[in-house]
Image 1 (cartoon, rainbow, N blue to C red):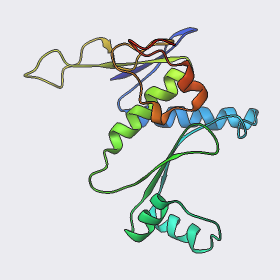
Image 2 (cartoon, rainbow, N blue to C red; image 1 turned 135 degrees about the vertical axis):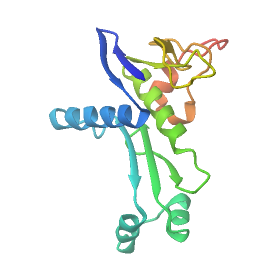
Image 3 (cartoon, rainbow, N blue to C red; image 1 turned 120 degrees about the vertical axis):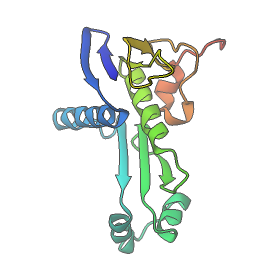
Image 4 (cartoon, helix red, strand yellow; image 1 turned 90 degrees about the vertical axis):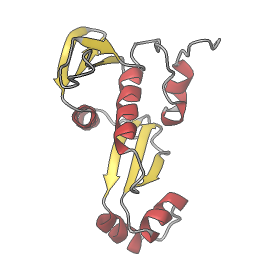
Length: 173
């Protein structure tokens, strides 16, 4: 179970998976963008482009495409675009059999939460024989507003402004 908290409120919502949490954050961004034009300021999104749609888009595209986009087209695989603040830059991944998509989604959720003042808690099992039994929420590695417990959030996913505000253990600002 995954719990989402805000600095201004108690628990906002709980989720079964990080995919559900990712969808929640994406809906929040869509609602926000309908009220405020954030396109030139900040963009947070996790976009999965299916190969068929990707192929149709690039068939009539006249501009340059990235090496990852070309790989996805050549290998006939899907493409993932991950935006972490910078509306003009994304991390791209060709969806291959060895790509750990669950880890990408989880990292994006933690980064989004950290940069937007949320805390994400993930329950873990304390019984090694019955891993289906969950306990109360225990902070996950990237939890905290203003601090990160033991492991620094992967900076390659963070916008430059957010990345500058991260406090990493053992690193002086």
